[in-house]
Length: 228
Image 1: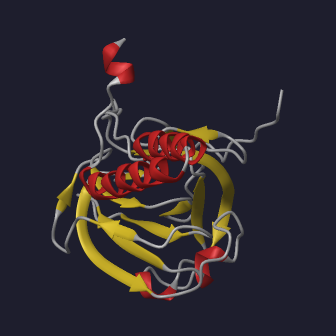
Image 2 (image 1 turned 180 degrees about the vertical axis):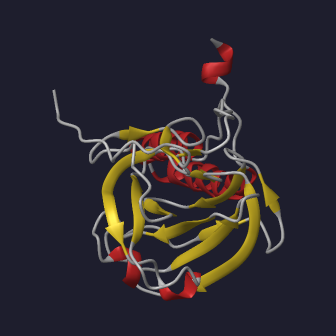
């Protein structure tokens, strides 16, 4: 029970939480009402920067979700040119994070970071399809042991103004390993080899590092889903 309540806080969040605490103390000097509003916002800030441990399936070929959130796109798409993944359509799975989701991002597969690309762009709603091309983003390409390349792109949203990527080119990552963070509402796109069947369906809720979104060793076609 305590592990459920006392969740670790991501290190990049402590300075922001401190600002919220100081702001709350200042608000109390004006009125109790404003002070309690500050308390609520501070509690939300602490909740936002939570960083729970996850249990990652470790079988070869599995691709896990890089983010908590809801699938807002699952289908074919041409990857951004700056990823150097070519101009042929790949399987793209997009996961949208709202301001109540965990915002720590995790590697979708085991692999070595062989390419990184930052693109300064707009801050339109991250749930919109055009956000993949127009918004500020930071992408990495993970090359697996068999040479398969998988792209993972952190995309800023309407409120997000800070993308944090902790890894450098040449780093080796394991599936489910933390590699970055996006502050305040955003999304992550995963690009998989053409012909990969998506296990993720539109509207499905993902858990970063745990939910399997594809199996590179499977010939199963992309799954369909419906609200029930």
